[in-house]
Image 1 (cartoon, rainbow, N blue to C red):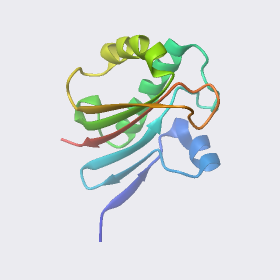
Image 2: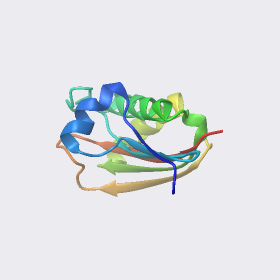
Image 3: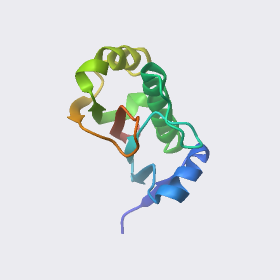
Length: 130
């Protein structure tokens, strides 16, 4: 049987209860993180793009920490972008300020919408605890 643990940081209890999915699942040393977006703990979407991107990274950091990982443990990342070409310069700048550059495989995908109106990015990743 697989060692499987549901990861829910304290600040994401409301999300877990209302949306019905786990922010992450840990199997052995591998942490599978659901896509994180730029919203507050009360699920309010942050309007300013730069602040929304920073919040998405901070939410991802919380999920990783709750699973015993850090940004340095991320091995694969996929980001989903609404209006990607318009916001990518700001997203990259924020990413380069908070996330180790060139440390994992990264795929960017442009999408028409995300789960809630106003969301501009969703960051999903897999981390392997060292």
